[in-house]
Image (cartoon, rainbow, N blue to C red; front, top):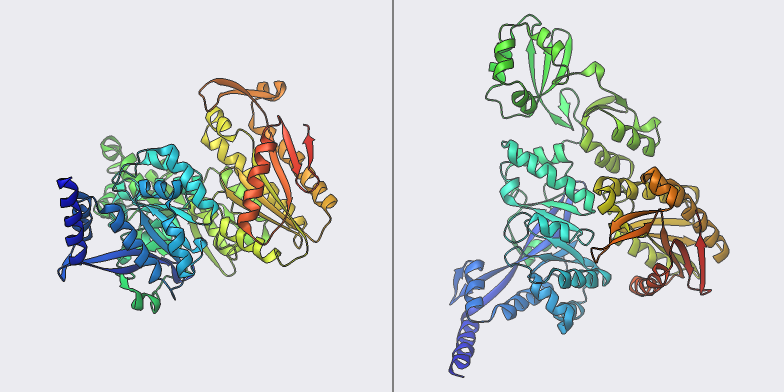
Length: 585
C-alpha cells in the first residue's frame, strides 16, 4: 500500500516538473528533391532544464510511468503535425503496439481528433525493448496495416531489432531504417559498404523501402546515392530535428548530379589514372595502395578499363604481387581480365529501343557486373545491382510507391486507385495470392520464391498492358496481389481473371522439379512442422464488387479468401454470385 502511494507521489512530482515539446526530423526523398516524411521526436525539460530523452524515459520506467509518457509524447506529436507535408513516423515500443491492438486504441483516437488519416502515419518499432511475443506482434502489425498504417523497423541490427526479427516480420514491413552506425563513414569503410549493400538487397527482397539514417557527410551521401540508388535518407546533412513551426516551412536543399558524362560509374565521377602499357605492375599498385576509392578508371595506352580496387586488393595476394612485380602492366591486365574490365567488352543497353521486361531478363541472366547504358547522346557505366532501380526511376517514375521486387504499385497507390474508382457506378476488385507460398520457400529456397513472385508480377503487368484503360494491378506484399477492373461486365472480368490464373499456373510449373510436376504435389513442412503434400502452382483468388472505402474492400476480401483457401487447387470465388470456379492444370 505504502509502495503504491510512493509511486503515485513520484509520478505526480515527475509530471509537475516535466515539459515536453515535439520536434520533427525530415526524411528526404532524393528522387523528388522534397520532404517524404517527418520522424516525431520529443525534447524534455525537468524544472526548465534540458534533459536527454534516454534519461527521461529511464526515470519514467523506474517509477512505472513509461506507458503514460509514451502516450503523452505520441499525442503531442500527432496534434502538432497539422500543416506538414508527407508522412508522420511515430516511434512505438512493440509491446505498447500489441497492447493497443488488444483493446486500448489510443493512437486511433488521437488521429481522429487531429483529423489525420492512418494512411499518413508510419508506426516505427523501437529497437530499445525486446519483443516478448512475436506472434502477437505479427497479428498487431497485420491489424494496423489493414487500417492503413505503414510499419517501419528502426535501426536494424542494433539493440533488439536483430536480423532475425527482420526475418520474422517478412512481408509485414513497409520501411527498414539502416542505422547511423553503418551510414556514417560508409564512403571510407569497405565493411560498412558491404553491410549496407547486403541490407539494401534484403529490404528489396522483402518488399520494404530502406531509409538511411545518420547522414552527415556529403561523401557518404554521394556513395549511397550513386552506388545503391538510394531514395530516402535522414540526418543532419539535410536538417537537425525542427520545431513544428520550422518543420512546416522546411524545404530540403538537394543537389545531386543527375547526368555525369566522362569517367563515371552510376552517375558519380571517378578518379582516372593513366599509365603506359610497359610500365611495371608494382608502380600501379603503389599508386593505389592508400586509395579509399572503390572504383577507378585506368587508361593504358589507348584502352580504358574499369578497376574495382577493393576486389583487386583482396584477390591479388602477396604471392601474385611478387609474381607480377616487374611485369608490364598490360601483361597483367591480359592475365587478370576479370579484375581489369575493358570498356570495349561491356554490354550496351539501350532502354529506348527495348522492352523493359526483356532488359530485366537480360540483366538478371548476364555474367557481367557492369553495363554501358546508352541514353540520348551520352553513355553511362552502371553496376548490375543498380540497374533495376535505375529503370524504375527513368521508365516508371510515375510509380512513386512501388513494390521493390515486382515494381508493381504498392499499398498506397492501390488505396488511391480504389478511392478514385469509387466514383464509378461499378468496378471489380480481385485479391489473389499463391497457395502455400511459405512451404514453397522452405522447400525450394528464397531465391526461387523471389523469382516466382517476379514472374507473377510480369504476368499481371502483361494483363494491364493489354487492357491499359480498364485494368490496374498492384502488389500488396509477399505473395498477395490486387487486380482492379472497370468499364466491363462481371462476365468479362471473370473471363480475364480465369485466363490469367491459367497462365500463372502454366508458367509457375517451371519452378518445380520434374518429379514434383509429374505427381502434382511437393513435400514440405507445414506450420505445425509436420511433413505434408502441397499442390503445385496453385492460386486462390476472390472477385468482389468494388467500394470507395478500401478498408471495406479489404475486410470483405479477407473473409472470402478464407473460404477460397479451403479448396485444394486453384480457385476463383465470385462474391457477387456466390460462385466458386475451380481451375485445373
